[in-house]
Amino acid sequence: MNIQTIPKSAPADIVAWASECGLKVDGKTFNPTRIPQLLEPLRAMADPKIHIGTLIGPVQSGKSTVAEIVCAYWLAFYYGLLQFNWQDDLRAEERWPGRILKMLLSCRDLKWADTAHAEKICRAEFVNSTLVVQGIRASGALDSETVPFQINEEVHLWVPGTLDKARRRQTLVWNYKALDVTNAGCEGDQTQAAYEKGTMDVWEVRCHGCGKFHEMRFRWNEKTPELGGLRFDPGAGRVDGGKYSLNKVMPTIRYQMPCGFLVHDTPVERRALVGQYRQTNTGALEEKKSWNYEAVSVAEIRWPDLVEEWLTACKAKNSGDIDPLKRFVQERECCFWNPSLHIPFNGTTLYNVSLKNRAAMPGAVYRGAKFDWQAGYKAKGELEHYWGVIVDVDIDANSQVIWEGKCNSDAELLAELDAHGVAHKNAWLDVTGAHMKRHLQFCYQNGLNALNLTMSRSHGFVHADKVRRFYSEGKPIFRELNTVPVFEMQITRDASGSRIEVPHPDEPTVVELYKAGLLAFYFFIRNMKLNVLKQKPDATERDYIRIDIPDDVSEDFKQMMESWEVVPGHRGAAKDESVDGFKPRSRFDHQLMNMAYHCFDLEWNLRPDTGLSLVGERLASLGLPNMGEREAA
Image (cartoon, rainbow, N blue to C red; front, side, top):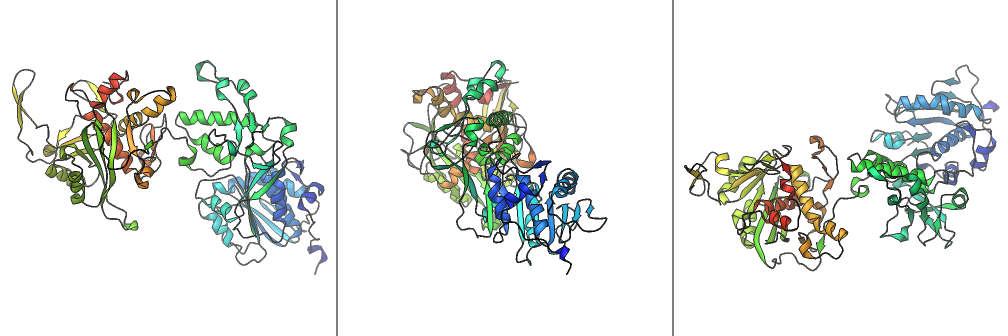
């Protein structure tokens, strides 16, 4: 055997080796004191017992330094093929000449092969090892021979399923090594799966106030001060025109530890925070490690920069652009993106613990029902069914849910109406969809009214009084079905005094709805109590319209109540079923839509004493405009 092909023994400490072997990363000698979060991942990937490491860290915090040091170490002291994988060939080719090749040439312990082709494009040959830098999208990139060593960069940008494919290249190697270096991705993706298979170590620092170790996180929550977080007052910097001055916000920035101890953004105070990793997944295999640390814990990253980035992201979100917030969550907080967790929800459903489901509302003057038909999911073993709500209303347009649930047939729906004493003329059914004619016929035969969202993107309907509303004036269902009316037509006179026939007031009717307007009206009514109490904590029930929901409603109902979110400035898109200003969090939204239909019913029904809508009269008494009529034609 040629003695030149045998690498010398690996150094005892990869960290000391990286700072002493002449290695330069991005043109600089490695300084192990700069970012202490990198040291444990480095040592783990030089430990024979560790096979896989997944490092989740913020941008500009040295993650790529770990990848490049490990790359040089494996090439210098191990045998075999090392794949350095990127999301595509373009990214691989960008990194090769400017960083990776320069790093390799600076390392004194690498023994280059004695050939003129030792440094091909994105490939390097050594006497004991070979490096291939490649994009995972290239044909055959992950279908090659067995690969004992892999470094996987920016995995959050990879095509789903390709990380698992890369792992399978190592199945037959007993001492394989793989390192994933990435930002956080989206909840449920391959990056999160890799992280959660590991030890899930989180970075924490010793507090100089209480002496205990605490995990550092960016977001401060007044309701959970025991978690700690970065505190600042954006209001201190507000100036005319809706802008703010970061110079005025900066003096308010400080990190508050769970014990209350404060740390300020000075080099002395921040570098004095000694840290360590704490394992949170005690059930992980010893051979699989994973780490996570937030940008707020990195002394090299200034807190005012994070605050400015956060405020910019929040401003963009309020204008309908959530991408900056998503990037901040993934690249700075190192959390896996889930809109339902990370986008502040505009409006919270309030549940009344003093009420019980099916208890009638005192003083109710009207009882109505709303139903939404569903075909059912075959994969879940579901047959067709209806989701429904029954709601009482008083003369002041306050409401109370007295029943919510599922009916498995037309007969069950009708039985539920009769059991709760709901007049059929006060019941509404969503008939949108391929089965519209069948549902219109059901309403016609049983005296129910129908709601149709086919024109949901119409931007409203101009009524005879020249006012644009989010609902149409309605049409008798018998005309939609080309049949006879249920009730005898009534005779009246028009403005000129001529006799005309008009449908009976109880004739089943179908009403078109503009969905964005419907949701805006629903959230306006639903949030009224919360918004009024925020501005006037001593407000009484006379100051707002209530929608009381008993606390003992089903979990399905509660889940559906959070299925839509308000996104100001958002332009609706048919592909994700969003509408102007609103985006669905979940397609499991049937009861939220039923409650929105109920709010429409408050607008549709007229008070017998004034002839005005129930909700319109109440809003007028509160000095508020009627959201259902605010777009004048």
